[in-house]
Picture 1 (cartoon, rainbow, N blue to C red):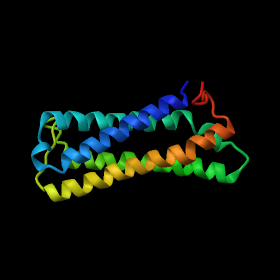
Picture 2 (picture 1 turned 45 degrees about the vertical axis):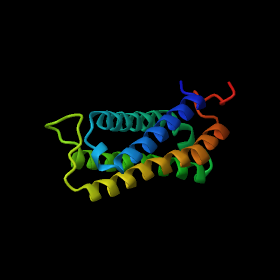
Picture 3 (picture 1 turned 60 degrees about the horizontal axis):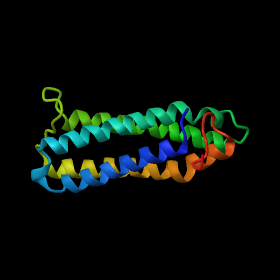
Picture 4 (picture 1 turned 180 degrees about the vertical axis):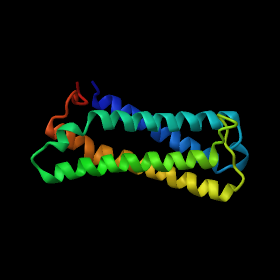
Length: 151
């Protein structure tokens, strides 16, 4: 069972990590530090876990709902989940070497920073869309295992 407070706390944690990492990444000398790398890997794991949690718990009632717009929104979020996972996998493949787990491999800093900003913005937009569109709709439709944030 999942509740809105859990989702809110996860979104807050992911947003906080995004903001800290983006700040650190803008200073080239910070990118190679163990602390920065550890935060980055914590961020990617939290995003992956959050998407899996949302995917497993929030769409079932929306997909079988009578309203086609409700079904469409659920399908769009599911598609977005796959896209974020795909983008993050490509990012990890590019910047996180398998031969040195827990590190970043930054040879082209400007490209790294640009791709990092794009990825963080994508995740932050997703969190905003979840908060403003998905969660209210799930609450309205009566999502399984969902309780109000006041519970």
